[in-house]
Structures are given as structure tokens and as C-alpha cells.
Length: 178
Image: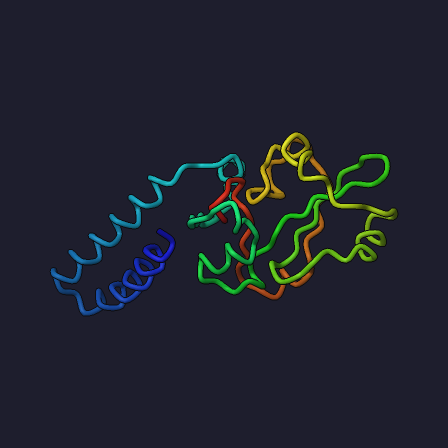
């Protein structure tokens, strides 16, 4: 489905350029692709993350892709979406000895530096056990978003996010990114 969206976007842009030549046939093609793009957006199931962004009038683009249990990582999402893995940010949830939760977002190609995490939060942290992820955050592995967790935890995003016009985060469901 995501490759279809890219093809639609490409054809839509091409058709917009063609509209400058203004022919009825080209306008009809433009409307057909626009209707297809609108149908795609309407038919996509909204997640809590999308509802939160909508309620704050924050713009986003939702993309879906095929996933399976053995490919839930951000690198696989980048491959499926055909986007650079440096632009797809994974959500890593950690906690300290007192069970205080911290959320880190890093590119698919990176790992959270435990030393840097300790310096940021002021104490040693360890990854949250996968068995506790859903009960703590409300999200499953492969669909964990820094937006809309059960509680408002501190979120740290890798500074490389500033290098890109667009980054991708989990939309709160496996197989969906915003």
C-alpha cells in the first residue's frame, strides 16, 4: 500500500504540472488520482497517536506497510516504506532502579548510548523488559510511539532529527508510521 501511495504522489505532482497546460483530459486524470489518494487517507484506520495530533491541529502524514513478527524493528519499517533508515526513529523505553520511566527516540541505524542516557537523566537506566512494555506504555513492541503513552514520561529525541525535513515515528500500531 505504501508503494501505491508513493506512485500516487509522483503521478499527482506530475499531473499538477500538466494542469498548467490546462486540458480537460489532464484535469480528469488529476481528479481520479486525487480521489484515489483521498480514499486511501479515509480508509486508513486512525490510531490514538493520530487522534492526539488531530486534536492539536498538528499536521502529519500516515503511512502503512506490511510487517511480520520477525521484522518489527525500525530498520524493517524503513525498508518497507522505502525511506532512509536514518529518518525512521525507533522508540526505546527505559527505567531506573526506582522504576521511573524514560523514553528515547533514536534513528533506526543507532542504539541508545547508556552513558549518554545516564548523563541526560542523572542516573543509570536500563531497557524496560518487553513483558512490561504494554502495561507501562499501552503499546506493543513494534508499535510503540513516544506520543500518547499511558502516562506522560520524559521523552528524549536524538539531535540528528534536526538534520531532516521529515522524520518518521511509530503511529502507535504495528505497520504504521507518521
